[in-house]
Amino acid sequence: MNKIIWKLFSAFVFLTLIVVFVLYFFVSLKLQNNFELKISEELQSNAILVGDILTGDLLENKNEDIQRKIKTLAEKLDLRITVVDMRGEVLGDSEKAPSLMENHKDRFEIIEAVEEGFGQSTRFSDTLNYNMKYVAVRVDDSGNTLGVVRFALPLSEVQLRIQLIYRVVLLGAIVAVVIALTVAYFLSRSITFPISRMQEVARRISKGDFSEKVNIKSKDELGELAKSLNIMAAELQQKMENLKQMDRVRTDFVANVSHELKTPLTLIKGYIETLEDRAINDTVKARKFISIIKEHANRLENIIEDLLSLSELELSKDCLSKTEFDMKKLIDEVTLGFGYALDAKRQTLSVNHQGDDFRIKADSDKIEQVIVNLIDNAIKYTNEAGQINILLLERQNEITFTVQDDGVGIPGEDISRVFERFYRVDKARSRKLGGTGLGLGIAKHIVLAHNGQISIDSEINKGTKVVVRLPKS
Ligand SMILES: Nc1ncnc2c1ncn2[C@@H]1O[C@H](COP(=O)(O)OP(=O)(O)OP(=O)(O)O)[C@@H](O)[C@H]1O
Ligand SMILES: [Mg+2]
Image 1 (cartoon, helix red, strand yellow):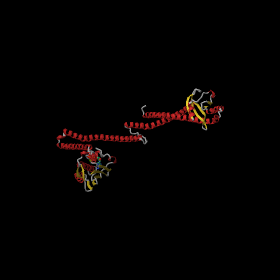
Image 2 (cartoon, helix red, strand yellow; image 1 turned 45 degrees about the horizontal axis):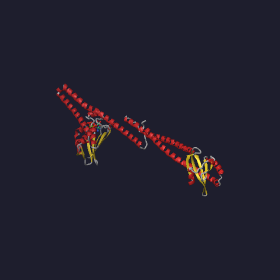
Image 3 (tube, helix red, strand yellow; image 1 turned 30 degrees about the vertical axis):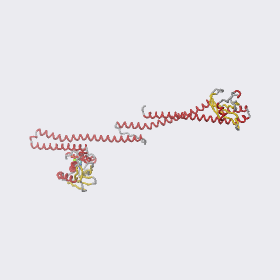
Image 4 (cartoon, rainbow, N blue to C red; image 1 turned 90 degrees about the vertical axis):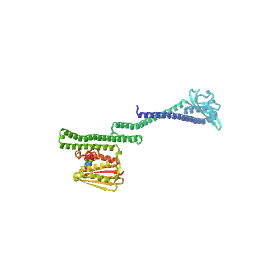
């Protein structure tokens, strides 16, 4: 299988086996050495003890006593005991009659024992026909050497005991391998589980399903990765929603543009056809129709101009041509232009200001467009005899102007949408008043292009307040 868990797991298995094998090798070796040493030491101290027991008999040359004693001792110790004198003559042996045995002075362990007090060797025994381990000690009495006591143990017995050790170590190794592999399995799983979980979530995300989150709380890299994945999913989801929203606005926009352009065009066509049919001969009627056609053509032109300036503003901020001018002067000029409209509805407009320096560096034509639309809206959406207030404020780095009316107001649910292009609260009414719903959209874009802010606050049947904040430069 190609899964990470199996890759990790087999790496662990491989490592564990190597470690256990090496450990097994060295531990066994060390144990075997120790064990052999211990056997030698044990045999040596026992031989010394036997030498002590026999000292008296050796001194007095009581060979029968020696023979008798070593037989019982050998039986108790479960090994073969041989006693030789300084010349190598066998004085006693626990398994054979001494008289039948050859001289032992050339035996390696005996030579060593005579010279150094202790000797040992491992070799094939001619007498017994198998490999033996020999340990010999010299028996001394007040400076004189009396003889040598030699123990002999079949090597197979030693090896048997060593094999037992090997077996115990092997069992330990197997237990270690099993434990190591269990731990390795769970460790591999704890690493691969979060990965496969994240893989699953990522797969869902790629299909546009953001409902699942990765729930991994560990504080390691995997936890961090999970966190990032969740953040990424949330951001993606947000972006997708924004895109959907933008798409909706665009679709609405296309539908709206088509509709807004089609209505005047249909009317224009209708009047032209009527003119063609008969009205052209009726001069009075013809003039009336032509002026209506002109009015709609103007409207078409206005809409197209508005759309163009909107898209121009959207494309870049560079389309602004900034100059320094006085906001107060500009507002006074604009309000002057609305005199007729205000009189027609018997409305009053007041301009108040706080501060004395209203100079600002901005695109005066565009700012004028904003002011015109805000005052135009205030007049349009306020009943006869209404009151409109304009307040101009000078702040440290910015100039604020507020257009407030006591008109029809905007319902709460529409407030957030009035800046969308073509959005009108009451379509029929605002169209009758000549509105297309582009004014606030354009105003917002102009203000944003100047790094300013625009906000609207309204209460139905009480009035509306629009605040524009523009940086001085
Ligand atoms: N002062 C106001 N009082 C009440 N409603 C308002 C006011 N200003 C704007 N609105 C509402 O917000 C809508 C959008 O305003 P906007 O200026 O964008 O469009 P418009 O005035 O209808 O048309 P245009 O400005 O393009 O001629 C208006 O149709 C109106 O419903
Ligand atoms: Mg308007």
